[in-house]
Length: 204
Image 1: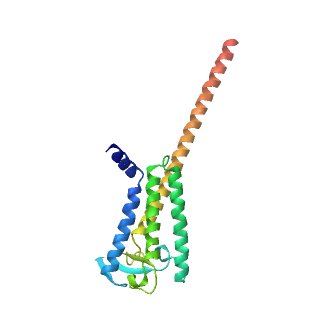
Image 2: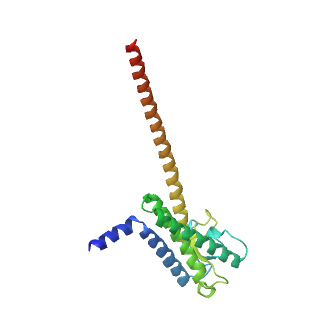
Image 3: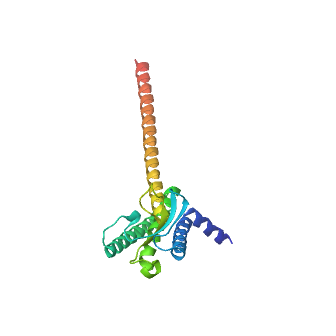
């Protein structure tokens, strides 16, 4: 029981649960869309603001990519695969000293990268009801954001934003610490100089 609790504590502190939650939510939501809608169908949740629109994206995240479906598949698969391996390698190497925010950011980005990679590798055109392999997109902020996206894209963006905020805050704190050290050193030097001056005056 003690080992189980220790393992559970590590699981939550490692933020691997966030990766599991992100990728499962992404896969489940996409399969619900594929099995209940046809490509092009749109369901307004908030009219003229938020719709659920089934779209198959053969490009990269947020419809970015080349005009060739096969090239997009190979390109994204290589990028997502390399990024995932890099994240896992870095995480395993540095997770003990890593800040919680950085762990969360990396797990979100990993979930997003692998979530979309699953679509490209395993969802056939027949299953998608489309002419080519691609990523299932369905979150449509119509009139506000032109691209339709999914949970995986959201994980990548949130993870990247958290990482940027973390590095900015870390840099600010680092500069403040350096400034404090500099002030302390100046005070010590100033105090030393005064003591030396007092000693000289007394010797005179």
